[in-house]
Length: 124
Image (cartoon, rainbow, N blue to C red):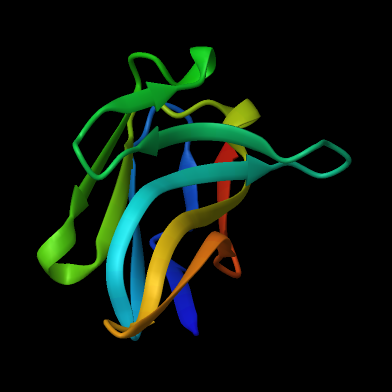
């Protein structure tokens, strides 16, 4: 199995910056797409940013140009750098991964691995 653990969420003032990290662990063979989603109270979970293993990115409109996704495959880690934060960015931020894991002679594929979330609160 694969686990994702997010960190970096905290209370920050409007206009501030945060960098979230998500580390994948387990018998990982290959990390495909990795991404960040968020869910505010009473709202649906929404995509923030995604990055493929080849480096192509996809951002939600609200994330451009304030947020930047990056990944460090040698560390099985994906980051989300957030600048010019607004109170409406307050949400639980979740890491997501599409991953091959297991052994090379018996690989398994999970397209839907989620972390437990990290709370980001932006005060006005």
